[in-house]
Length: 210
Image 1: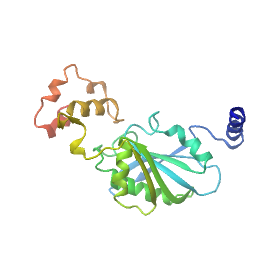
Image 2: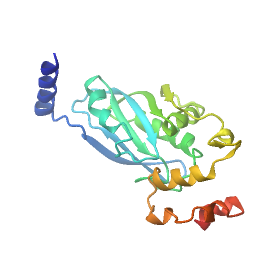
Image 3: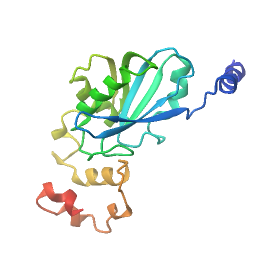
């Protein structure tokens, strides 16, 4: 059975040009004029298909993005699309935790629904950050979003990330410096004495200070 399936996959790739990275990239204009980068798995027919959509701050081309699922979803009748959250990767604007994802997600879903390879039906998937932002996008009630599947999502942001009932600033700096795909990230995010950052006040100017 495994060999039969493997042979079928090879045939699909050979005759129809399927590959794990069979993606095309578009820059989509948002309501405020900024452009968000989105990749979608290239359809090889004129058939309009439902779309599985994800927004990530970790880089739409990274191994953490579920990008490798594109071929699987296409073989099962779906187009997979993934976008860089505003201010990360190839997208314009400034990254602000979740703040812009609702409106940007709404605008991207509207764009997806109008594409020649889409049948107008969009579902979302993703975990952690990409699970949480689904809730904010769904709250905007885009008419073409039919379902969301958030996992490992965050509750109230005042409660997360917690450390003895206080905001875990050390975690936040570490996450921004090592995980989020910021366009101008450098090794300067790694400080030999992080307490210098942690003791800076007022807190709302910390990003400028860092």
